[in-house]
Amino acid sequence: MPIPPHLEQIFEGALVSILSYVDNRGRISSHPMLPLYDSARGNLYFTSSILFSRKLQHIKRNPRVSVLFTGREFIKSPEYHVIHIKGDAKVFDEDVHSGWEWLLPLWRRKEPYIDSFLKQRIALPLFWERAVIEVRPVEMLVWENGDMGREPIRVKP
Amino acid sequence: MTDMKDLELFKEAVVAYLDEDGYPVSYPSNFKIKDGFILVEKKFRISQGAMVTLTFNHITPLPSGGYTDRRYVVVRGRVESLDGSLKVSPDKIYGWDEKKTPFPEYCEIMVPQARRYANELVSEHGKASGPKISLPSLLFRSTRFPFTIATVVPVLIANTLAAYNGYFNPLLFILTLVGAVLIHLGLNMSNDYFDNKLGADNINRTPTPFSGGSRIIQYGLLTPSAVAGMSTLFYALGAAIGLYLAFSRGLIPILTIFAVGVLISIFYTAPPVKLAYRGFGEVAVGIGFGPVIVLGSYYVQAQELPISAFLASIPIGILIALILYINQIPDIPYDSAAGKRTIVTRLSRDGVMKLYKALLATTYGVIVTAIVMGQAPPTTAVALLTIPYAIKTVRKVGENYGNPYMMIPAMGANIKLATWTGLLHAVGFAAAAVFNIFS
Image (cartoon, rainbow over all chains, first blue to last red):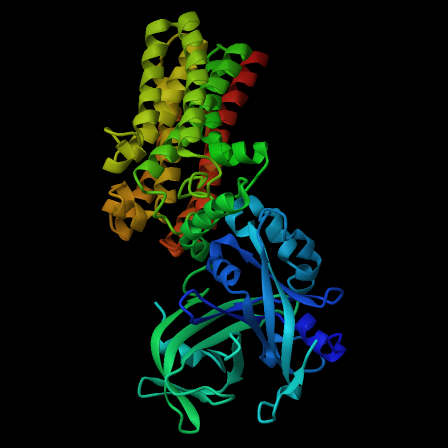
C-alpha cells in the first residue's frame, strides 16, 4: 500500500525528525536528524557524517529503527500530524565521499544554503564524508492533527 | 556540560523505549521536572523499571529555508513509577547546544571518531576511505600557501630598496623570491609535522583559517611522514637556490644569512630547540621575516649591507611577528596545555594588547625615523596611510579577544594590515627608484 499523500507531505516538510535505534547494550539512542523522503522509493533517508558515526555502527548491527515526526514549528506543511515510523534501516557507506550526493536535491529543498557549505568542502573535509541511512517503513502510527489525546491510526505501507 | 537545567529550554520531550518486537517506539510528550525526576506522559505498554530515552530537541526554522539555533539534550533513565505519568530517574545526560559549542568546534571534537570509522571502512570494504581533495587543493591547504605573502613582501621591500639605491637584476629578484617562498613552504609543513608530533595541533578544538595549523594530518589528508617528506623537499629546493645565489653573489655573507634563516625556520618548532614552545617564536619570526629576508635579498642584488636595508627590515619584521602574535591568541588554552609557552600565553590580556599597540607604534616610528635619518626616501611615508586601519584592527582584536570564531575577522584584518603596510613601504621605495631613473 503506498504511503498516503497527507503523510508524505509531513515527511517532505519536516526540517527535523528523531531517529531512534538500539545500541549494542540494548539501550535506545535517539538523534535529531534532517529527514529526506524519496516518494518514488517510498523510503526515508538520512545522511550522517563519519564525524558522528557511532549511530552507523549501531544501526549496522541492529537495523530496527524508528523515526518520529513531531513539533508543529519544525514541519513546514499545511497539515500537521504526528507520525511514528517503525522501519528497517540499511547503511550505505561503501563510498562516503560521494555515495550520498544523489540525495543533494532533496537536501537542498530543506536547506537551500547547503551548496554554499559544500563549495567550502575543503574547510571541513570530514564533515562531507557521509554515509546514507535508508529506512524502509514497516509500520506507521499517525496522530492526526497532532492530537496526542486520541488513539493513533495504524498504517501499514 | 549538559545538565537538567538545560531542559527548561525545551517545549516537549520525545520518549523512546524498546518495544517487544525489537523496534524502538517513540512519542512526544509534555514534561515536568520534579525533585530530580522527569515526569512524562505514559503511552503504550511501558513497564516499571523499563529503560527509556528522552530526547529534547530544538531548532529555529529560517524564513529563507533551513534552520539555526540547534540544541538537543538526551536523557537516559529508568521508569521509577507509573502513577498516571512516567517518573524517570536520569542515569545519563548529554547533548549539544551550538550556542555553547559552535558547530566547527563540535566537529573537531569528533575527528578521532571519524578517523576510527574511516579505518573500519577500509577493513570492511577493502578500499581506502576518507576525505579526498584535488591535488592543487591539497597542496594549497597543506602548504598554507596564502601565508607566503609574509615572505613575498619583505623580498619586495629589499628589492625595491636596492632598485632605489641603483641595484636591480630581475633574474636575481625572481630567484630570491622563489627560493625564499620554498623555504617558507618548508617551514609551514615542518611546523605542522612537529605540532602534530608534540601534540599542540591534536588537542586544538577551535582551529581557524589563521590558527591551529593546516589540519591535514588531523583530518587524514596526509600522513605525518608525507608532510615531513614534502617539507624536506621544499627546504632542499630552497636551499639549492640559496646555494646558487651564495656562490654567485657572495658566499660567506649570503650563506651566513641563509643559514640563520633556515635554522630559525627548522628550529621554530623542531626539538630540541623548539623556539615557539619557549616564547621565542615571535622574535624568531620577526628576525626571519625581517632582517634575514630583507638583508639577504638586498645583498643578492647589491653585494653590500647598508644601514638603510637594516632599517627597512624592522617594520616588516615586526608586522609579520605580530601576525603570529595575534593568531596565537585563540590557541592560548591548547598551547598552554601542550607546553607551548608563546608570548601571549605568558601575558595577561591587558599585557598582550599593550605590547601589540607598542609594537605597531614602533613599526610606524621606524619608518618615520628612517626618512628623518635620510636612510629612506620620503615616498616611503606612504606606508603611514595604514595607521587608521591599524587603529581599527587593534579595536577589533580587543573586542573579540579570546573568542576563536569571533576573532577570525580581527585576525584577517591584522594580516591585511601587515600586508598593506609592507606593500606600501615597498611602493614608497619603488616610486623613489622610478623617480631616480627619470630625474
